[in-house]
Amino acid sequence: SDDVCLLAFTSGTTGNPKATMHFHRDVLAMADVVGRHLLETQADDIHIGSPPLGFTFGLGALLVFPLRFRAATVLIEQVTPDALLAAIARFRATCLFTAPTMYRALATRLADHDLSSLRKCVSAGEALPKATSDLWHAKTGIRLIDGIGATEMIHIFIGSKGADIRPGATGKPLPGYTACILDTDNRQLAPGNIGRLAVKGPTGCRYLADDRQANYVVDGWNITGDQYRLDEDGYYWFIARADDMIISSGYNISAVEVEGALMLHAAVRECAVVASPDADRGQIVKAFVVLNPDLSASPDLAAQLQSFVKSTIAPYKYPRVVEFVPELPKTQTGKVQRYVLRQQEQAASAAH
Image 1: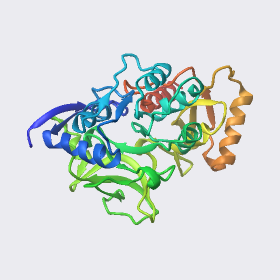
Image 2: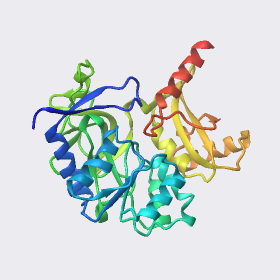
Image 3: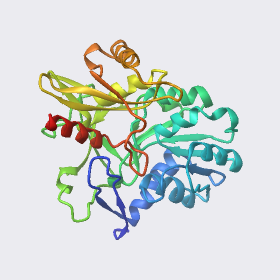
């Protein structure tokens, strides 16, 4: 049970990928914690989704969970939105796994496809905006199961299902896991405070020959690199990745919160928000925006988006620069590589 079963590589959203070691017992742990408890996988389930089998989200969803509970999986060679929707209808899939970006793309194409077989839809891989959760629920009647996982932890460790889902919140620790919010001195914070998410349980981080292990595991806690808030009811709310906090003129601004506001605007298909160096404010909020089809970029539209963010969250959080782009840089698993955009901004600043 304590022999290494697999090496899983992180997806590289923050830089060089790391190899994580997982034991045989870790594979069974994720099957029973996520497959049995969160998803309640049954033998008549048919799983389908976009995550590659080479990453642990896909490994669990499309291989381990169905094998553990004698269910089935539909594997698609080219996972495009239309191919995924067609396969759901053709094979009567019951459980869908993909990232928020894909759910937004699917939601625009539902009219021509029969999704009545779906019972559960799981979102992971990146933060799930409340706007995306509400959009999917409005289109399908199914409330997305949100979950935070990590390659270091092998799979999801916080999430909620059914009536316990609170849209906008990630959820509560799954059976066997304990979580807390730590400050910069590794002291636990009371509910309501924003700090670093820390977790421990039946799985944990073991990097293969990598000095970054000391940064991830501190005093027995796995420090995920996410900023979170715990509410009085025990729900965990995602604020931002630690490196996605923007400090502008002394204000702490969550890039993800600004993205969530932009995603509520009808013109926005996708967006990514990063810190851009600024001589006066230290950093400013910059938004890279992919528009919906048939819309044209213009200074007027940029100003509309800026005003929309001001009125939706807070005036000081609005993106001072909006750049329209045809696409965003992403990993193999479809996660946005914000660090690529940050490096681009830093290089441009240095050049000036």
